[in-house]
Image 1 (cartoon, helix red, strand yellow):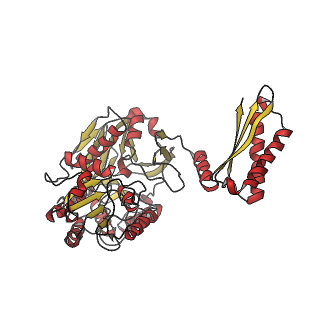
Image 2 (cartoon, one colour):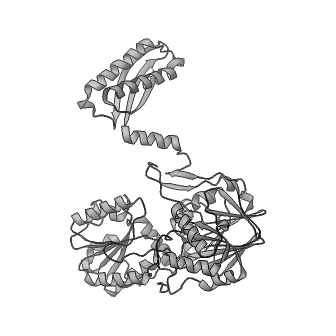
Image 3 (cartoon, rainbow, N blue to C red):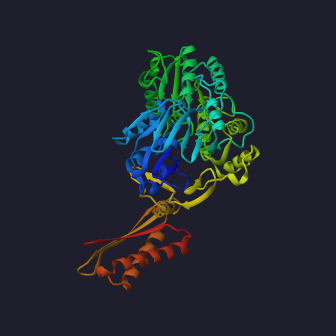
Length: 531
């Protein structure tokens, strides 16, 4: 998420979410902290979206609910944002569909959308012009000379801005470590055609639902070989339905079937497209692999194609799914075996091409790990940008610029806001620490019933273990813990005002006893019932 500000006008480019890290137990999503924007809501003139991937639109329902404004993007991007807003019941957001090369005037900002190739339809860079100069955000891109839709990256418009003079270039850094060029999507089409020619049973393809161009290419090949198409997985069904409704995905009448009638067709006439290319626990492919899917079981005659590469951190999940598919006897094809996936991001030579066309005064590498942005800074310097005109940004770092100076300004509040179910921001470090504690060491509950008036123990102490020890095999520890609590009670006042202190004493003493006894550190939770 990028915030551009000139005098009293603010525009926002993209509004994404990311997967939670491994230590964010139970968290569904991480979205940007918009504390800074909330203080300037009245100055937001609009949100502009480069494309419809989750890391660019995933936070829209949460952010637009708090800081609403007009939103702008291409047809598929706006359709996917609209789907999210409806799902979360966010209403009243003015939505504007633009075409590549359209210009939108927002306050003193003039914003032109520039078509780029990527792994989703409708991807654009955005040129933002104000009295201080022009800043170009590349968005996610690659330079594919044979794209599926026939529309190559609009190099002419990039060159036009380069001739006029570009103040700053914000360019993505995802594949900057890779030399050469990114392979064309057309190569994936050739691979799929060969695989369909070989397949004797069902073909099951797991991929990102947002990659509509690849989806179209796979479906066209399937129909050529007489296969009906079935979508499985919530996002696959939703995105394909939206793409068909706006004409971005075309399936001839009679070729799309429901999963309820899959068994009515011979195996060699079926293509299943499903979610789960990252080994996500609840996704379609994972449930099929572990025989947990209610409609589809893997057969030995199936060919399963995983058309993606693992996102960093997901390698173990997808590896387990592949192993399980092999155990079931399926033929599994993935990126290490065949060219069933190409990146949607530019490699070094394509990035150099854009730098050569844009010729910016200042350069700010974005969209990548810090090491990638560092490498991108080195590349930009080699392309002629002076080192003093390059800034590797930190989250929340204000960068101030005009034709005369590039400077670092204040640091604004930023960070990740954690989304867990319907709760937004109510899970913080303390809750995560408790969850980690529970997941590693378990829970020991000490339950007491005390008569407040009589100041005496009515029942207990009862000991409940969850994820700590198996009680039936460790009765001596349970008995010893109960005896320890009785001793604490005998030394303590049972007056109601003293109960908080009593709970702390029980927690500390039991913790010390358990650790001395078996060197474990469960969470101790004393509960006092007032009877």
